[in-house]
Each structure stands twice: as C-alpha cells, then as structure tokens.
Amino acid sequence: NAGVTQTPKFRVLKTGQSMTLLCAQDMNHEYMYWYRQDPGMGLRLIHYSVGEGTTAKGEVPDGYNVSRLKKQNFLLGLESAAPSQTSVYFCASSHEGARAEAFFGQGTRLTVV
Amino acid sequence: SQQGEEDPQALSIQEGENATMNCSYKTSINNLQWYRQNSGRGLVHLILIRSNEREKHSGRLRVTLDTSKKSSSLLITASRAADTASYFCATADGGSNYKLTFGKGTLLTVNP
Image 1 (spheres, rainbow over the protein chains, first blue to last red):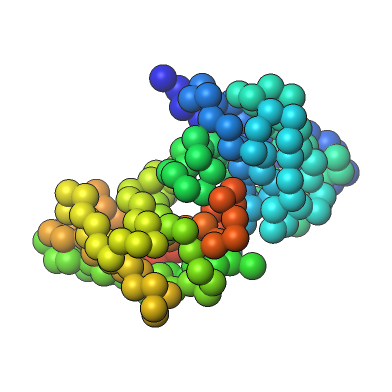
Image 2: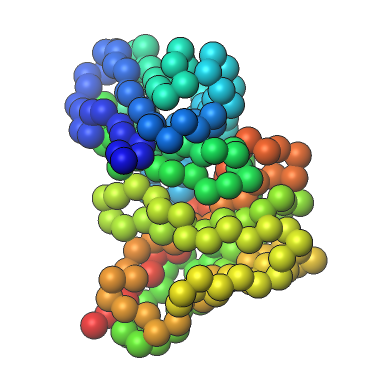
C-alpha cells in the first residue's frame, strides 16, 4: 500500500519555466490538498479538492493551478515559475476532510533560479 | 492566515525527560490534530482530539484540549532520541469541514 506518492521528489526550474507536480493516492480518499512549507512559515494551503472534478483555493493560491480529473490524482501546476515559489511542496489526502487524519506524501523540493 | 500557533518554537531536552508543547488557536474548532515531521520527510499523524473531548492518550503521548482557553498541549513522556522532530498542531475551523490549517511547529531535540 503506497499511500500518497508525489513526483518528482526534486526539481530545479529556471524563472519563467512551467512544470506540473503529480500527487497520487491509492486510499480512495475524496479530499486532497497541496501545501507549501517554507522556513519559519509552517505549512500553508495552496489549493484543495473535495472530490473528483472539484478544486478550491486555499490560503496562497496565486501563481498555481490545480486539476482533479481522476479521484486518485491531484495535479499542481506552475505556469511561469518565480523564485518566490522555491519551497517544499506537500500533497495530502483524507477520507473525511478536516474531520479525520490526513496522509502526507514525502514532499517535492522545488528550486526556482 | 494560520489558525494554530505552537509554543515554544524550539525545545531541547535530555533522553528520558518529558516534553510539553502547546498550541493556541483563534476561532472555534471541530477538532485539533497533532502531527510529527522528521527532517526531510512528510508529516505523520499522531493524534486527533475532538472539540467535546478534554484529554486523549496514545502510547507515550497525552493530548489535552481546553476550548475555553482555545489551547491544546502535547506531552511526550520518557522521550527518546527518535522523538527528535518538528511537531505541528492542525485545526479544522468551525465553519469548515474541508480545510486543515497548520501552525508553524515546535522543533523538539532529544539529546542522548
């Protein structure tokens, strides 16, 4: 049972480049989340999804887009990367949203130069 | 904005001692959760306490919740070097069943 898997684990981008981070979960969870973690800032919610085909903005959505075309996958896109998006990105999923425990992936370390 | 705030930001203790971390939050909650993060890894769920509960235990962990003071504490008894990690509290805002909001964490170092 893999749980929550994020790809890639590391990536270096040049300013202005685009990329997509993939999150896959095999627990049949309805709820999925993307967070970013920066030193001294804790985890901040970027976007989330309450089911297949749905997405919603979190605390820091600017510069990111998401899609949930399949229940098991939640994609985070950066259309034009900026140095301010250098961060560690975590995906999480939950069976009952914020009413139950969340399962996290191992993170993607993204550097934008 | 972040709902929960952990205190202290960093804590260093000797193996065998108890470690206490606190979390304060601002608005009403449905539940409060504690997570652990080892360096360079994802977060791992430790314990969930609902708003109508006052205390919960799990192994060497004890969590209390005081909704009148909008605060929670996590106690780790008989700490081990392997407990070295960052600990985060997370809350589900009273008006939301979807969003889990995290604090900035407490970095616990347990010295052998």
